[in-house]
Length: 420
View 1 (cartoon, rainbow, N blue to C red):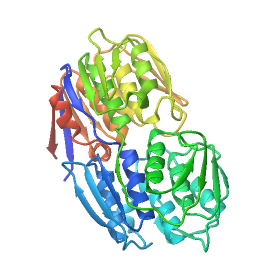
View 2: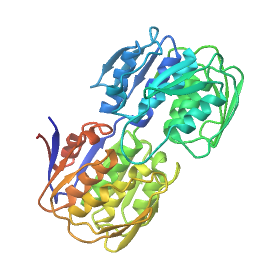
View 3: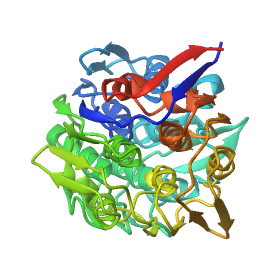
View 4: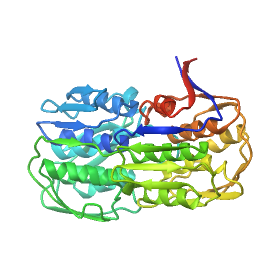
């Protein structure tokens, strides 16, 4: 049975809300637990379906999983993990299954992982991952849909990515930490989630230099040990709530956030006329006077995140005037445009950018979520629309947002989850 969200729009969001741990940081950290025979203990793990799916895959590999969803504590025991095949029914639901390749190769010198699923936002091939593994000494072949990797020995090497790839960087790091000798990764992604993974691995005993830079140096070690690590706050969740509050003309404070991870989105909100006050681990926002049109272009961190592009587009429908959103990361990330137009938005796709003519009142309608972040953009638009908006296929939303409707209700939104 599928659920839908029913939104009665037109209410200003006000109040305080606490953010969850970062889904995109938790997933590689869960995979990294394989590198230690003793496992790993994590805190601040979000209870979202992507995490639940990866934990199922970990159990199929032999891990003992103890997840306290209400507290975000996760205990992983990995002494009995083996590089077994993971059924397609599990990995088809999420792209993050590819993150198991690096740690399995690092610890066992082999991996059998089905080619990944997830959101249909672009090709996102794993050839960069495979290239890195081959440089480290692994052989690769595809058999019955599985990517099979084997390496009698992993040796340090030079890895140069053709393009910035977050999961590719994470996979290469996890394979290299237990390779013989020194590995240098050039053109590495430096997103906060990559930094969080490196910091965790260093605590486990890995030798990594250049964390947060585009050049990372890794000296291989024989083993890693068990530690406790707290997952960083979810910058994409925080950005989504900032834009929802701004679109509604409301005000509030987000707690358990790292404002430094959102410097560019905050700058764009300020440019749009919104008052944003960053604290040590909080962000306050006030948008009672509406928003002005602002142009954005997505780019790798520290640029404007592609994962906030759809939400910002929904915000710009409320701005008087014309704005542009240019997407440079994925080639198929405008599927939400048609759905936003069903609500009365005036959006036009022009190559890899969208022209937004804001200032029109949105009207409630039946819309369908096409991917994770598109779901969030439809929620933001529905919150500003007059009348009732029904958002279908919200299982996409559950992949990356913990208790989304509950947190919005605490801010005064009229939103409910209903089984269809």
